[in-house]
Length: 223
Length: 223
Image (cartoon, rainbow over all chains, first blue to last red; front, side, top):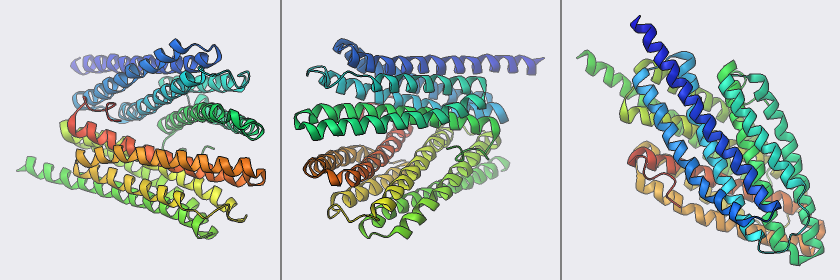
């Protein structure tokens, strides 16, 4: 009976861990959407709020790390649970770095909003949408232990990479045709590169999920 | 006596973990140096070997992860050792991603070596040297629990960021003056960006070391 009681309490704690990671991921997804919404709608106060939100994400990482350490120290989990907790430790690091990228995007947006728009923003919001979906799906794959969804995330990364290359080429054309656009084009290029890095983090998370579920033979072989 | 025996065996295992992380870091440092040496000396076979070496680094990550899981499961470490092992889990992920960046650099170098050099390469080798030193020092800070060295790594990152901005500007000038240089300039820009990301990973490692040694109040406050 005692054993069963401990196991149930531990299950509840694991569920709490899952929940707090999903809450952290939700904050990060909102930051992705808002950093680019602030660009499209020229909403500098929204950019400011996104920059400020990075602190919440940083605090969430520290809290979840501590929670994982506590579970490892007090519950001494084995096998599957141990693997879940150690992957959780790695995943929150990726989420925190996505938050950093969003704050960086918002800082460039704050500057871009002080000048006339270089062009209508179409591909950058598309990229942001894909990146946000990839983050969401990589986390869903993690909490549900769903390797198929994780494989989908890895495949979607190619599309975001291609969008980034396309945006870079287009911005280059602007710069060559009119050097007055260079400063803005460099900032937009930075935004695009940051979104690409966010998608890379989602891919990293997805790869870890595949590893968690299927074992060591899969990681580093998905392209 | 039994207790002491266990503790000593565990100390030996922790030392083995430290050693295998340093060996992995050594491989990664060599990859940084060689990927750029292959550019400067137009040595495509060296670029090929660097690309191939990425598999060794990936395998090292998987092996060290498994070692950490084993230590957590069998030794059930507490406090400082637990923190050390969980940080080790995060650090090898950064090392593995540095390996990825080096392989990506080497792929671009393989292409660049098929065309005449755009210009003498001066700043890119300097950046690579700094990035390599940062990786080495972040790992030294980790195994020796040296927060001062870790703070130095975080500060050095600014210098690498500045070099990257300078290189990007210079390449832009080339592209504007002569569109025939665009393809090569974009590849060199990619190399420069990858080196900057490597330095970012070293900074991430250094921040985790500061966190490990000094506790939760420091992380996310060092710039």
